Amino acid sequence: MRIAISTDGDFVSAHFGRCPAFTIVEIENGKIVKQESIENPGHQPGFIPQFLHQRGVECIICGGMGRRATSFFSEYGIQTILGVSGTVNDTLEKLQKGTLEGSESLCKPGSGKGYGLDKTECDHPEQHRGEH
Image (cartoon, rainbow, N blue to C red; front, top):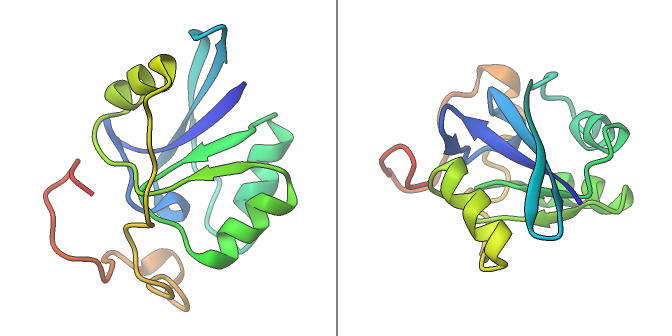
């Protein structure tokens, strides 16, 4: 299974569309067989789901994502796991153990709408890096 994790440094990014990069991992029989980092190609409605689909991604993990983005991923058959925070390494460890759990998106609906790439803040409560 190929999985994409929205990545900001060593942490899962709270904002999938505006993360600096995606960590792409391939997991077979509970083991990571390939891992790479690719730069975010840019935030445009529907583009990232298509971009990741073309790379064989079957699941995306992130902190937050709007309903519209979730539906774009669904159209490509890509599972979304939202509400994940912490380091990428901890997330990968949980994936391998089968203990990774998602929850509600860390962003309020519409928090990125109309802002484009210049949006630097979200409307979710203030949290320290790596905790959102």
